[in-house]
Image 1 (cartoon, helix red, strand yellow):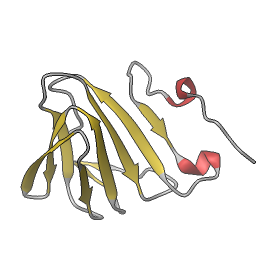
Image 2 (cartoon, helix red, strand yellow):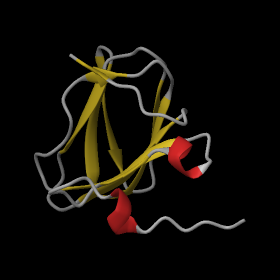
Image 3 (tube, one colour):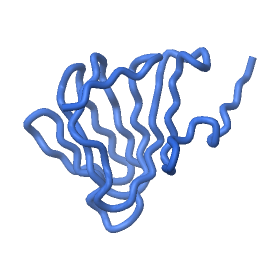
Image 4 (cartoon, one colour):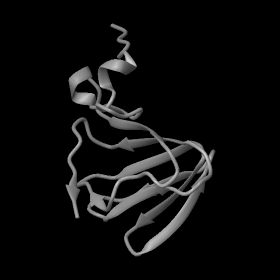
Length: 111
């Protein structure tokens, strides 16, 4: 059976970002569809599973453990389980990025 999840039903309150938790919809993955202005982004955090980022528009500076990388539209970045990470929109415009969680439920520990 096909299912469409309306964007407004998974929008983070007070934000343009969408938060999809797979378990609620019969899926084995979860994701954020991030829409951030310059300077915005989450602080350092980690998950007990891997995370993959696909940058759709803009530029993200991503901290992965002790490393920092810059990802731009079309780039993909990956972090393994239990590694501290975070990102910031360091571009001049809007950052649009999909943050794919390899889990049906999001589990996050903030530093």
